[in-house]
Amino acid sequence: EPVQFPAGAAPACRPPVVRSMFRRGLARCAPVAIVAGQARRWVACDEKGRETNPTSPSRRGIRVAYSVRQSHGRGVWYPEAPTIFTGALDDPAEFQKRVIVFSGNTNRALAEATCECLGIPLGCAEISTYDDGEIKIQVERVRRKQVYVISPVCRGDGIGVNDSLMELLLLVSTLNRASAAEVTAIIPYYGYGISDHKEKSGVPIAASDVAHMLTAMGVARVVAVDLHGPQISGFFPPRVPVEVLSSGPLGAFYFSTKDLSRPVVVSPDEDSVVRAKEFHSAMRKHAGQQCGMAMIVRQRGREGDMELVGSVDGADCIIVDEIVASGERICEVAAFLKKRGAKRVFGFATHCLIRGQQNSSQAVSKAVPLLGPLHSGSRRESVHTDLLTGNCDLEELVVTDSAPLSAEAARIPLLKQITLAPLLAEVIKRLQCHGTLLDLFELNPGQNTWSKSPELGLRKKDKT
Image (tube, rainbow, N blue to C red; front, side, top):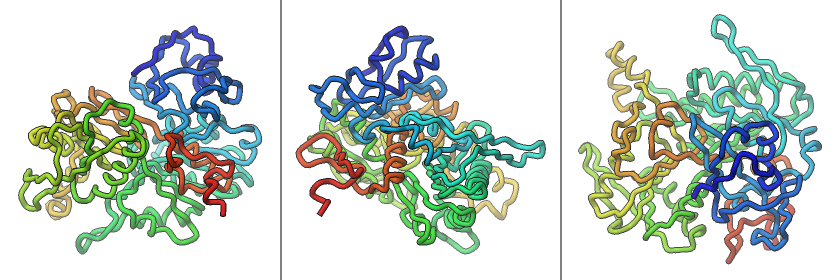
């Protein structure tokens, strides 16, 4: 439920992230609606973001992860702070002496929000183009610093996927040549990840080629979110560790705040079963209630012929997928579940790649007949009509901000975006403090709070 507060409210009653925006005048213009988590309340915080009321249920401080950010006029939902983000830095000035975060032009808003959670400014990197279209980069001093680059490999506003990839490669190379101690690439969306195996002769394994290029540029570590295939992490050499994050627990926490009747997690095909099972486990932990699971089996060679494994009669279904490129498939699955007796149907996808134009590969296939059979299975990227007009059987489509939201996607009335910024901020903190990411989403036994030990990841029973 939205929580309204007037623009002239006292900044001390807001979380630190919102207070910083208030000081900069970003929240002064009009009333702002923030979607809260389970607490649905504001608390008083000190200058470091700690809660001043010791009798609060959180008991360990507010650990703020709220913020207000606009994406084409659309608010972004931030998960409740105690779930993932363990709090602002105790000494941001000291942290800033050793760590610096940069961003490309593809999804700068996500990098800025991550730095807001950490309480540090985003690194100064001037990324522009020459008159002939070549990329020009100039960064600030990074000698002997730990550098994190947040940049997805996808299309953005006026940026193609190839330009996005070149920005990331040249930025990593520039930072290494500037004597950075280590460069960690945080890639919310790993471009070319769909081409992760060789289906037939004469096709590339583009995901492996991207990994080789990043390795050649000198990246020390890679952090990705929901890779298309688990084998992509094996394309990097042993000296380049790969951390794969999951957005499923974020989505599960969001849906656990809703009043669902007999929730059932649905996998839209056989390839998404593992992702749906992880979402199902997180839903049971968050919601504290029984949650069912179902799967759609598609008959190969017979288009539109689907079979349901499991029961959805009278249930609220959540379709869990990785990518929404056009919305056609998720609308088709939603209509199928409605026919099978589903009460309400929701959708959750990590990456929203909806654009208003057709894939360029289809245009090439029309011009070059030889390429027609190779690209006959290319996914369409035009917005599905029912999704755009709101006539789809979906109640709500929830996506993350791993990729920037296009203007066409912002026109979809049932689309809602949640942010990865608190998750990425917590990952940077743990990596910098030599913590572990194994229990990033693990719950303490018998409690609805996340484990937070001073060792940033080692629970008491694991210390031995």
